[in-house]
Image 1 (tube, helix red, strand yellow):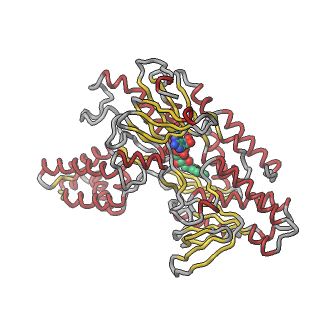
Image 2: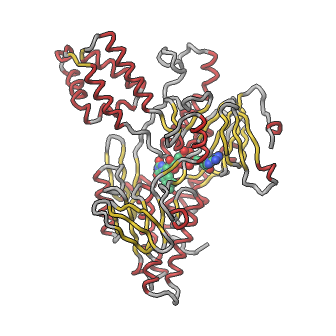
Image 3: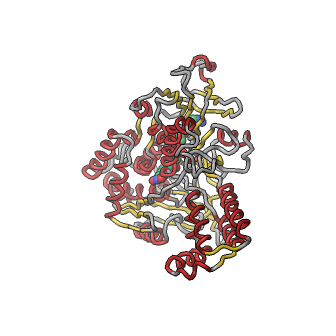
Length: 537
Ligand code: FAD
């Protein structure tokens, strides 16, 4: 399709091009007032996938079609006009304000390629699996990133059981075939292990009684613990539970090669190298950058980065009218830090080196309001003494006259700076960013017409909108056997069967449509009543 062929819904409307129909892109589209813009959506997937339920798809706890919603259904419910094209964006041309796309459809090559012009570009391309260039991984391992991956895993698990049941296979061959290895002890790897264990112990043992005792599940993790981003209590509970369930958890194990027979690992503490025969491997070690994003980062001189850097308003650094949300982007924390330093420098210049606790608190409040993530730094142990002092000052007026050395505080902040982490690559962040950006877009015209209006941020002229604020709502780690661990805001930890019910309710409520909600809940009921299906289809 050429540019001339693009439907011009309303020539006065600005064109918004959205790349990707994942968590970030869909959240943006669901909340955007599409009557205000001419919206074009480009993605090689014509559906939204509810990724947190993909581990459940691998073992048939829920069906693949229950966790996806056609994107045309989602945009069809919006009042305005939006157009979806099933294609891949292969190049972003920020100077020419256009994107180059390639369709996978079986059409002539000249019909496969097209370009789309934009006034505003929203990049929500997500990320791809990261193999860390480990030899043999791509050829021999399964990944768990897309719906197709989950479907392949489901078939492959059943394949292993059918192969092991053949009369021709030796005992050693059966043992090898029924050895399931999972690489990566993060939330996805752990949840898959839990699902697989449940599938085997609740359903497959009944249909494959001859080989049930030969099954082995091994979880390999390079770090010292699995689920290391969770509270220590959750990590310990998960490790203990897996141990009780007979799942071997090998921590400190670096995978350095995989071939079609075995996976080679190196023990990080002893340096000992060993080779483990396997029947099936699932590789779940984190995410890497998509080539199209890498190419774009080179164009805009954001080299040596893993994801696109944006400012706090989710605008890509160094580009006009280009926004990036979700796993393919991160807020440029260093720039934020420089801004914070600037506020302190200004206070320093005004007050020649010292501030009273009261004045200090005002500056902190100012900083926290602009940069809410700083509140997190302030909780950091390194700053504990200062925070304690501030807390004390509330109850003790005398302390308000204490003078603090600004330079000392700035030094503490720079120490924290080196520890600063970007927002996690989760659906929660992606969905909140999509919602935030849609709200900004919905108010953009109003803000342009009334630049000094109430939307102007603190009258500083920095931007018309408040910066993006991430609200962490907690995180789940399903551990199998109807038990889940949850780390909720305020470091509140809950583990067990009741948390599993919380997990069911949250995931049912978070479904993108009533259709998927009903399908997912009926899948859960079907599983409770009839167990999981072990047909290999
Ligand atoms: P994605 O959702 O990956 O969407 C990217 C979109 O871009 C897709 O539509 C894709 O088709 C499209 N795309 C790709 N390439 C192109 C291209 N060249 N051109 C155009 N479009 C393209 N997070 C949680 O918060 N909680 C969980 O429990 C959780 N569980 C997870 C379980 C699994 C198995 C996985 C894989 C992830 C899980 N996550 C979870 C993480 C979460 O899925 C991601 O953080 C989230 O999907 C990121 O959203 P996104 O929109 O940035 O990317």
